[in-house]
Length: 166
Image (cartoon, rainbow, N blue to C red):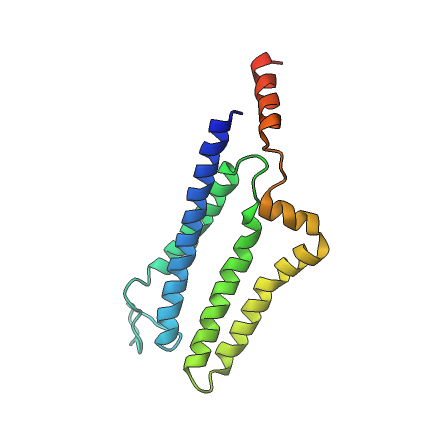
């Protein structure tokens, strides 16, 4: 694998992560607008809707699928030895939604359900991080920095093996 190929795969992985961020941003945007309207909405159907959904509510399910597609592409495109940032997808999702719950709780009086959901979501975000950080610091370091197997000497050796054939 040449350096150019590693750089290209790194660019692809960065674009895939951008899809993940876009999907999470869409989901949080819709969550924020729905929570500011009281926390529930509906549209269509034969029932009377008390609170119609805000414009752009389609971005919530689309955001989920865009983020999942980005995670899948990141797994396919991540250069060998690069960071394994997929481990942070769960904390990013639940941490950001937990903050949305807490923001909505702070804006209303007596919103104990929002406080509870916010704290539970933040705990759900922190638990995997705590397990990785406390449990195995080497695994956390590999996840953030990569395992170093993509260094130029190893790439040159792997490229030579490919050129030499079996």
